[in-house]
Length: 231
Image (cartoon, rainbow, N blue to C red; front, side, top):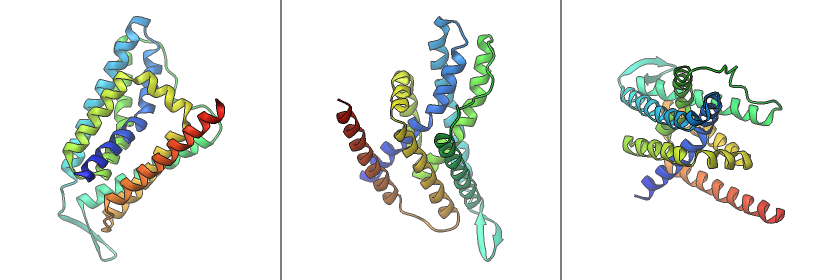
Protein backbone atom coordinates (compact mmCIF):
# COMPACT_ATOMS: atom_id res chain seq x y z
CA UNK A 1 0.00 0.00 0.00
CA UNK A 2 2.84 2.37 0.88
CA UNK A 3 4.56 1.52 -2.39
CA UNK A 4 1.40 2.36 -4.35
CA UNK A 5 0.98 5.69 -2.54
CA UNK A 6 4.64 6.57 -3.12
CA UNK A 7 4.47 5.75 -6.83
CA UNK A 8 1.25 7.75 -7.23
CA UNK A 9 2.57 10.87 -5.49
CA UNK A 10 5.89 10.66 -7.33
CA UNK A 11 4.15 10.32 -10.67
CA UNK A 12 1.81 13.25 -10.00
CA UNK A 13 4.80 15.45 -9.19
CA UNK A 14 6.77 14.38 -12.25
CA UNK A 15 3.76 14.67 -14.57
CA UNK A 16 3.12 18.25 -13.39
CA UNK A 17 6.74 19.38 -13.73
CA UNK A 18 7.24 17.60 -17.06
CA UNK A 19 4.01 19.19 -18.30
CA UNK A 20 5.23 22.73 -17.63
CA UNK A 21 6.81 23.05 -21.10
CA UNK A 22 3.50 21.99 -22.62
CA UNK A 23 1.68 24.52 -20.45
CA UNK A 24 4.10 27.28 -21.46
CA UNK A 25 3.60 26.47 -25.14
CA UNK A 26 -0.19 26.45 -24.74
CA UNK A 27 -0.03 29.82 -22.97
CA UNK A 28 2.10 31.30 -25.77
CA UNK A 29 -0.15 30.02 -28.53
CA UNK A 30 -3.38 30.98 -26.77
CA UNK A 31 -1.94 34.45 -26.20
CA UNK A 32 -2.40 35.06 -29.92
CA UNK A 33 -6.16 34.84 -29.47
CA UNK A 34 -8.53 37.54 -28.23
CA UNK A 35 -8.47 38.00 -24.45
CA UNK A 36 -11.82 36.32 -23.88
CA UNK A 37 -10.71 33.21 -25.80
CA UNK A 38 -7.36 32.68 -24.09
CA UNK A 39 -8.54 30.90 -20.92
CA UNK A 40 -10.90 28.51 -22.78
CA UNK A 41 -8.06 27.76 -25.23
CA UNK A 42 -5.67 26.92 -22.37
CA UNK A 43 -8.26 24.66 -20.74
CA UNK A 44 -9.00 22.97 -24.06
CA UNK A 45 -5.29 22.50 -24.73
CA UNK A 46 -4.70 20.81 -21.36
CA UNK A 47 -7.84 18.70 -21.80
CA UNK A 48 -6.51 17.61 -25.18
CA UNK A 49 -3.16 16.83 -23.54
CA UNK A 50 -4.99 14.52 -21.13
CA UNK A 51 -6.61 12.60 -24.01
CA UNK A 52 -3.29 12.41 -25.86
CA UNK A 53 -1.38 11.12 -22.84
CA UNK A 54 -3.97 8.49 -21.98
CA UNK A 55 -4.16 7.26 -25.59
CA UNK A 56 -0.36 7.05 -25.80
CA UNK A 57 -0.22 5.40 -22.37
CA UNK A 58 -2.67 2.62 -23.27
CA UNK A 59 -0.88 2.06 -26.59
CA UNK A 60 2.56 1.68 -25.00
CA UNK A 61 1.20 -0.32 -22.06
CA UNK A 62 -0.36 -2.75 -24.55
CA UNK A 63 2.88 -3.02 -26.52
CA UNK A 64 4.92 -3.59 -23.38
CA UNK A 65 3.26 -6.99 -22.88
CA UNK A 66 4.90 -8.41 -26.01
CA UNK A 67 7.30 -10.78 -24.25
CA UNK A 68 7.89 -13.17 -27.14
CA UNK A 69 11.63 -13.28 -28.07
CA UNK A 70 12.38 -11.23 -31.18
CA UNK A 71 16.16 -11.18 -31.52
CA UNK A 72 19.36 -12.27 -29.81
CA UNK A 73 22.39 -10.02 -29.36
CA UNK A 74 25.60 -11.41 -27.82
CA UNK A 75 23.70 -14.28 -26.24
CA UNK A 76 20.99 -12.07 -24.71
CA UNK A 77 17.42 -12.55 -25.93
CA UNK A 78 15.36 -9.39 -26.43
CA UNK A 79 11.55 -9.34 -26.57
CA UNK A 80 9.30 -6.59 -27.85
CA UNK A 81 8.91 -5.39 -24.26
CA UNK A 82 12.69 -5.20 -23.79
CA UNK A 83 13.15 -3.22 -27.00
CA UNK A 84 10.38 -0.81 -26.00
CA UNK A 85 11.89 -0.29 -22.53
CA UNK A 86 15.36 0.22 -23.99
CA UNK A 87 14.05 2.70 -26.56
CA UNK A 88 12.05 4.58 -23.93
CA UNK A 89 15.01 4.66 -21.55
CA UNK A 90 17.38 5.97 -24.21
CA UNK A 91 14.79 8.59 -25.18
CA UNK A 92 14.50 9.79 -21.58
CA UNK A 93 18.28 9.93 -21.24
CA UNK A 94 18.47 12.04 -24.39
CA UNK A 95 15.51 14.22 -23.39
CA UNK A 96 16.79 14.80 -19.87
CA UNK A 97 20.33 15.57 -21.03
CA UNK A 98 19.10 17.97 -23.73
CA UNK A 99 16.78 19.78 -21.32
CA UNK A 100 19.46 20.10 -18.64
CA UNK A 101 21.90 21.45 -21.23
CA UNK A 102 19.31 23.99 -22.31
CA UNK A 103 18.71 25.05 -18.70
CA UNK A 104 22.39 25.61 -17.91
CA UNK A 105 23.31 27.14 -21.28
CA UNK A 106 22.61 30.80 -22.11
CA UNK A 107 19.83 31.60 -24.49
CA UNK A 108 16.05 31.74 -24.59
CA UNK A 109 13.89 28.68 -25.11
CA UNK A 110 12.51 28.66 -28.62
CA UNK A 111 9.17 27.15 -29.49
CA UNK A 112 9.34 28.23 -33.11
CA UNK A 113 7.72 31.20 -34.81
CA UNK A 114 4.11 31.56 -33.75
CA UNK A 115 1.92 33.51 -36.12
CA UNK A 116 -1.45 34.99 -35.21
CA UNK A 117 -4.31 32.85 -36.42
CA UNK A 118 -7.85 31.73 -35.93
CA UNK A 119 -8.95 29.43 -33.15
CA UNK A 120 -8.75 26.35 -35.40
CA UNK A 121 -5.10 27.12 -36.18
CA UNK A 122 -4.29 27.40 -32.48
CA UNK A 123 -6.09 24.11 -31.76
CA UNK A 124 -4.08 22.32 -34.48
CA UNK A 125 -0.79 23.66 -33.10
CA UNK A 126 -1.74 22.61 -29.56
CA UNK A 127 -2.81 19.14 -30.74
CA UNK A 128 0.50 18.53 -32.53
CA UNK A 129 2.66 19.75 -29.66
CA UNK A 130 0.60 17.80 -27.11
CA UNK A 131 1.77 14.61 -28.80
CA UNK A 132 5.41 15.72 -28.69
CA UNK A 133 5.26 16.82 -25.05
CA UNK A 134 3.38 13.68 -23.99
CA UNK A 135 6.07 11.17 -24.92
CA UNK A 136 8.47 11.79 -22.03
CA UNK A 137 5.74 11.95 -19.39
CA UNK A 138 4.11 8.71 -20.57
CA UNK A 139 7.41 6.82 -20.80
CA UNK A 140 8.25 8.10 -17.31
CA UNK A 141 4.91 6.80 -16.01
CA UNK A 142 5.63 3.35 -17.44
CA UNK A 143 9.09 3.39 -15.89
CA UNK A 144 7.85 4.32 -12.42
CA UNK A 145 5.14 1.69 -11.91
CA UNK A 146 3.64 -1.40 -13.53
CA UNK A 147 0.05 -0.62 -12.50
CA UNK A 148 -1.93 0.99 -15.32
CA UNK A 149 -4.55 2.33 -12.89
CA UNK A 150 -1.88 4.29 -10.99
CA UNK A 151 -0.53 5.73 -14.24
CA UNK A 152 -3.99 6.82 -15.37
CA UNK A 153 -4.89 8.30 -11.97
CA UNK A 154 -1.61 10.23 -11.74
CA UNK A 155 -1.95 11.66 -15.26
CA UNK A 156 -5.59 12.67 -14.68
CA UNK A 157 -4.83 14.30 -11.32
CA UNK A 158 -1.78 16.13 -12.72
CA UNK A 159 -3.76 17.56 -15.66
CA UNK A 160 -6.66 18.62 -13.39
CA UNK A 161 -4.21 20.38 -11.05
CA UNK A 162 -2.60 22.12 -14.04
CA UNK A 163 -5.98 23.27 -15.35
CA UNK A 164 -6.99 24.68 -11.96
CA UNK A 165 -3.64 26.18 -10.97
CA UNK A 166 -1.87 26.66 -14.30
CA UNK A 167 -0.76 30.24 -13.60
CA UNK A 168 0.43 29.50 -10.05
CA UNK A 169 2.37 26.42 -11.16
CA UNK A 170 4.11 28.33 -13.96
CA UNK A 171 5.06 31.15 -11.58
CA UNK A 172 6.34 28.71 -8.94
CA UNK A 173 8.55 26.77 -11.36
CA UNK A 174 9.82 30.08 -12.78
CA UNK A 175 10.69 31.30 -9.27
CA UNK A 176 12.24 27.96 -8.22
CA UNK A 177 14.19 26.67 -11.26
CA UNK A 178 15.93 24.10 -9.05
CA UNK A 179 12.64 22.16 -8.88
CA UNK A 180 12.64 21.71 -12.65
CA UNK A 181 16.32 20.74 -12.61
CA UNK A 182 15.51 18.16 -9.94
CA UNK A 183 12.71 16.70 -12.07
CA UNK A 184 15.01 16.53 -15.10
CA UNK A 185 17.56 14.66 -12.97
CA UNK A 186 14.82 12.21 -12.02
CA UNK A 187 14.14 11.83 -15.74
CA UNK A 188 17.72 10.65 -16.24
CA UNK A 189 17.35 8.22 -13.34
CA UNK A 190 14.14 6.75 -14.79
CA UNK A 191 15.90 6.48 -18.17
CA UNK A 192 18.68 4.42 -16.58
CA UNK A 193 16.03 2.32 -14.83
CA UNK A 194 14.28 1.52 -18.11
CA UNK A 195 17.53 0.68 -19.88
CA UNK A 196 18.42 -1.67 -17.01
CA UNK A 197 14.99 -3.32 -17.14
CA UNK A 198 15.19 -3.71 -20.91
CA UNK A 199 18.61 -5.34 -20.48
CA UNK A 200 17.30 -7.87 -17.97
CA UNK A 201 18.37 -6.16 -14.73
CA UNK A 202 15.36 -5.26 -12.61
CA UNK A 203 15.81 -2.46 -10.08
CA UNK A 204 13.29 -2.38 -7.19
CA UNK A 205 11.15 0.75 -7.51
CA UNK A 206 11.33 1.37 -3.76
CA UNK A 207 14.90 2.62 -4.10
CA UNK A 208 13.78 5.12 -6.72
CA UNK A 209 10.86 6.41 -4.64
CA UNK A 210 13.08 6.87 -1.58
CA UNK A 211 15.76 8.79 -3.49
CA UNK A 212 13.16 11.05 -5.14
CA UNK A 213 11.33 11.90 -1.92
CA UNK A 214 14.59 12.42 -0.03
CA UNK A 215 15.80 14.79 -2.76
CA UNK A 216 12.49 16.69 -2.62
CA UNK A 217 12.79 16.93 1.17
CA UNK A 218 16.30 18.38 0.91
CA UNK A 219 15.22 20.83 -1.82
CA UNK A 220 12.25 21.95 0.29
CA UNK A 221 14.68 22.77 3.11
CA UNK A 222 16.83 24.71 0.63
CA UNK A 223 13.84 26.72 -0.59
CA UNK A 224 12.75 27.53 2.97
CA UNK A 225 16.32 28.55 3.83
CA UNK A 226 16.56 30.87 0.83
CA UNK A 227 13.22 32.46 1.64
CA UNK A 228 14.30 33.03 5.24
CA UNK A 229 17.54 34.66 4.11
CA UNK A 230 15.62 37.04 1.84
CA UNK A 231 13.21 38.10 4.59
